[in-house]
Amino acid sequence: MVHTVLPAETAAAAPVGAAPASAPQAWISRFDTPLALTDRGPLAGLRFAAKDNIDAAGLPTTAACAPFAYDPTAHATVVARLLNAGASLVGKTNLDQFACGLNGTRSPYGAVPNAFNAAYVSGGSSSGSAHVVASGEVDFSLGTDTAGSGRVPAGLNNIVGLKPSKGLISARGVVPAAQSVDCVSIFARTVGLAAQVLHAAMGHDALDPFSRKLHMAGAPLPAAFRFGVPTELPFFGDAAAEAAFGQAVTRLRALGGTPVAVDFTPLAQAAALLYESALVAERYAAIRPFFDAHEADVMEPVRGIIASGRAYSAADLVDAQVQLRALGQRAAAMWGDIDVLLVPTAPRTTPSPRCRPIRWRLTATWARTPIL
Image (cartoon, rainbow, N blue to C red):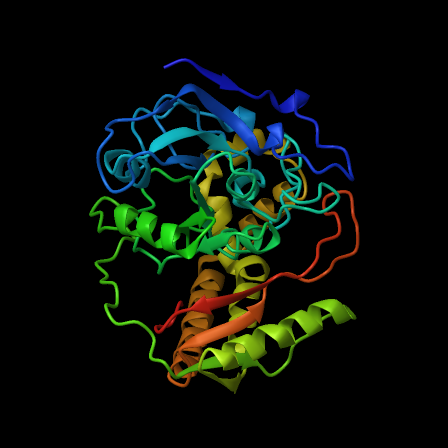
């Protein structure tokens, strides 16, 4: 099928201060006519986009690195499931290169602006997928989430970002970031649609080494529930964000929730391990043949992050994996006391060439089982 690809060297960022309904640099490639396999199914009539580290036959997969691009001969499992459920695929979206970043500016195809105000970042790494949902160009989209890439852009663009339990949606046909913890995520404008897409996308895949046979809980939360609030909440001097978080706590109380103070330390330490320990070797291993031959074609700071994975030994990786499992045990104990965890998603930051200022948005992670 004929398609168009946005050249990396000609994709300019939207002017600061503009508030466009859409941003061309949110897309990397699109079908001339949305790809559809059937007009029947639970998702019939809905249009979606896929982050461009997810294979869709007929469009190249670039991971936001043109020299890495290849033409897949088959759809990723999750794309095939959604097409068979009646949805039509519009195209592939921009991302922080190799899904390495949380701000949405690390792409040679252009920095993706916030959908409400181009002076602010979209969040990443699933920047384009969040933008095209927030701007109404598609009904839902696929991202990936290893360390927040499916939730930070959702919070910053005022949409729903659903990170399923690891292994619930197949990651076969997805360029890995850190394969042992990668998840395909879902963006939508409502929780109901995100859940509907999840039901169509989920399912065990024996060809995905990290796929798991999981079952969705059938019972809703009780009228009275417990929600966790971290004992330490740094707002970096942002009084407006602190007040907004307080309002969120008040709303959950009104819905029947009881706040429970929780120690967020094990979750923060687990997140740090993904970039500050031997676990970063997974990012190097994911693209090692390409990276060793074309390191100069990878942009900074992505290049430096991935290259750091070479420095670790096998013993270092084992140590980091044991640390992660130990932190998982501590997190499991936390979930014995709460039904919901309420946390701010992203802090205000200092401007830099690769990261414009961003503001906090608030989100609740609804889960009754440990994530790690």
